Image 1 (cartoon, rainbow, N blue to C red):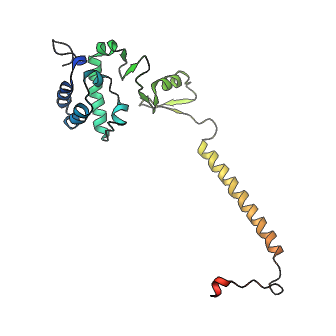
Image 2 (cartoon, one colour):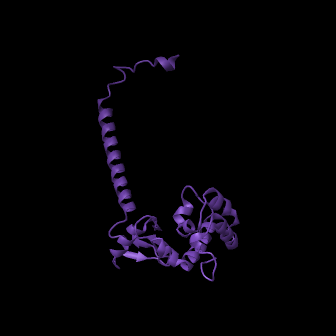
Image 3 (cartoon, rainbow, N blue to C red):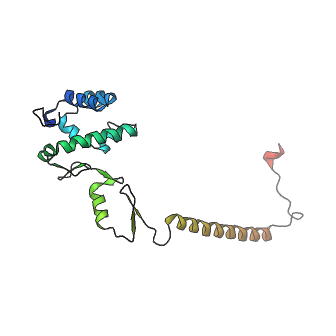
Length: 190
């Protein structure tokens, strides 16, 4: 059904064709959700992203199923790169991106456009690339958590000193207990 060998092009798949593909790929549990409730056809299946699977209205909860479904979708997208191009989408080997800006794919939790802008400005000294392709900025001077700790410590010392000073002043100004006895406590006396 991949669009070659005289079979029906993915672009012309109905929700029934999508359901058959899902069953063939081992995703029987999601046929009702994707094909019956949300009426995914071939075109919408090709444009489906991991973000779509995780967010409303689909909100798939099983991480393994999400990842396996995305692997199968990427294979299908790769086999049908020409259909994606006809739709105005391109296949980049990982996920299709809409050149018009309609489909946003996530990169480290950000849209691909934002991520591309960040990747263009990366320099080897400031950033470290992990094996999974994510980048982490190297701490320049002091990690923000250390700054928070230092500021909190200064605040605690200041408050402790101020409270001690106020207690000394108040203690010096308390009147003599024999001359001025405390007022009776109406509530506790009863």
